[in-house]
Image (tube, rainbow, N blue to C red; front, side, top):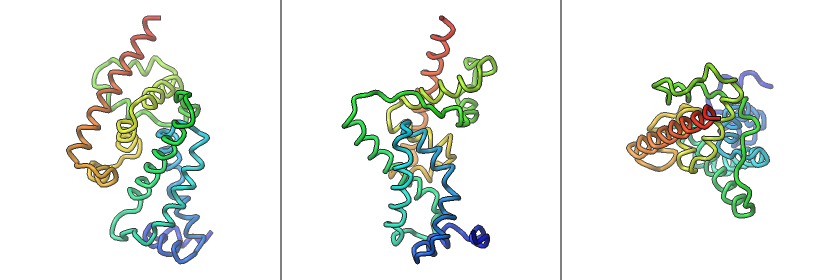
Length: 203
């Protein structure tokens, strides 16, 4: 690996990647692999689709390289591609399968602390009393069961830390709609979590 590549900006790497420099491509993949995989695992909730969509994302990045505005950050653009590819993959899978989306096998690998803190203004989440992996699994299931548009905004905001403006640009919707949709998603998450906690405690 050429360690000088690590000092280059995303735009500079993409320029080299476009010119056929394979090492620049590997550096881009290295920079975004973990966060993209985490996003796709959460959004798709189907591990047999994650690898395919990940590869399709970078293929699309290459195919669309000429349209990339180098004055803008690459990360939101890359996640926009990934989100669109993930939606396509889910729709295709749902057309060919009547099996409901199941629990996230790797949910314990994900960090839900920030999400939990954001939706727990009161003491309704006894997270200290729960095993971490159980908490993660239940959070993952609630997120997975949400409608696609709410799940997407929740993951982008809380797990990937995109700003309102970035999400508005990525999703092609006004900032006001982003805030409204995120508010709806957080409210639904909190409601589902309380219901989950209540059903557990009643057993």
